[in-house]
Image (cartoon, rainbow, N blue to C red):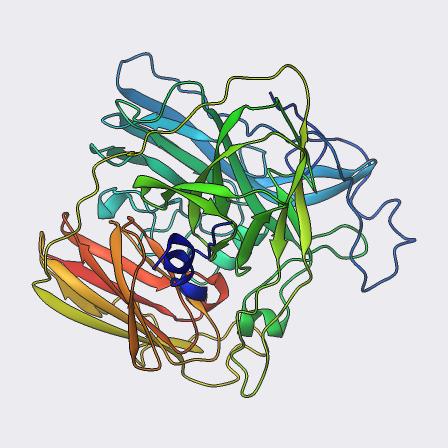
Length: 503
C-alpha cells in the first residue's frame, strides 16, 4: 500500500489526504468604531441575501494576550466576555460577543511547565464559562457546564501545563444549553502551548489561521438560529479567517510556514486544500506527529478539530474550502453541500528566503498499551424531528439518554487504558470530543469492515461519519468529572453529551 492509498484509507471519518509579516485590516477583529449603529447604510441589500464584506485585505495577526506576571514560569492575564460593536464595512457596526473586544479572541501563548492563572470576567447578560478545549487541565478548571460563571461575576482559572502537552488548542464557552449562541456570536480564541525544547528547526514562520463562519441579515446583524440550525447545526454563509473575509497572506519566496488550522465553527466541516500545492502534515489536535507526512492534498477538519501543516510557498496560491456532504438528521434528507469557497490568498513577493527542511522525525510518539476495559457510546436522536422549532432539550442523545449534569453516565479508573467505541447509526456525521485528555484512534468500522487508522496521532476531537464506528484508546490521569459530547454545538446543547466520572 503506497502513501497515497494509506492516507486515503482514513476516508471521510478523519483527515482526508492524497499524495500528488501580516498587518491589521478591517474585519471582524478590527477596532471598535463609534460610528452609526448596525443597519445604517445597509437598506439597499435585498432581504434574504448574504451581505458582502470587504475582501482582499492583509491577513490579520491575532492580538496576543499580554502576560502581566513578572515571575518566571508564570502566565497571568485577564479575559473579559462582553458585547462589543465592531465595524465590518465602512460606517456600519455589528454587535458581537467578544473576549477582550476582539473576534477571534486574543491568542494565549504559554510554555510546558508554566503555571497559568487567568481571571475571567463575565459581562454578558447570561452565564458563561471558558472551556480550554483539548487541554490537560484539572476537572475543576475545565470550564464545563457544571461550574457556570453568572452575569457580572468573576472567576479564576488556574492550572499548570504538564510536560509533553505542546499543541494548538483553543478556548470557547461551555455554558449549559447556550454554548452554540455564545460561539456563533464571536466567543472563541486560540491557546498555543509551546514545548520547552522545540523539535522543529528554527526559522519556521508560525501562522495560526482561525476559521469561523458568519450569518448576517440584511442590516449586518448576526442572524439568529433557524429551526433547521437546531436540527443540523448552524452553518454561516461567510467563512472568515482571523476575522477577515478572503484575506491575503504576503509570503516571501521559499519561506517555510508552520500553518496551524483551527475549525472554530459551530457545525461546518472544512475540507481544505491549496490550489496546485500539497501540504506536509506535521500535527493534529494533540500536537506534533512522530514524523511529517508529505504530499497531503486535502484535510477534513470537523468542528473543533485542529491540524498543523508545513508549507513552503514558491508561487501564488489559494486556500479553498471544498464541498463536503456531512449528511442529514432528517429521514431521507440530504446533507448541505456548499460550493467551493476561496478563503485565503497567498501572494508570494519580496526577497527570497531560505527554505527550511523538516527532520524525518518530529517527536517520540508511543501507542497506548492494550486496553484494560471497553466502553461503547451510541449517538442518536430521541426524536427524528427534534429541534425543528427551536432548542429542544432531549432531541439528541448518547446511549439513548439526553444530557443531565446530575447523572453519571460512565466511569473510568485513573491510569487505566480503555478502548472506546463511538457508534454513529444516524444519517449525518458527528464530531466526538472528550474532555481532559487526548486519545489515539485505532480503527474505523463501516459495513462490518474494520480499517486501521493510517497513522498514529493524539486527538481530542474525531469525526464519526454516518454509518461508522470509531474505536480509540484513551487514558484519564486525573480524577473528577469529565464531559464527552458531539461538537456540533446545537446537538451538544440539546442533549448529545454525557458525564464521565474518573476515580
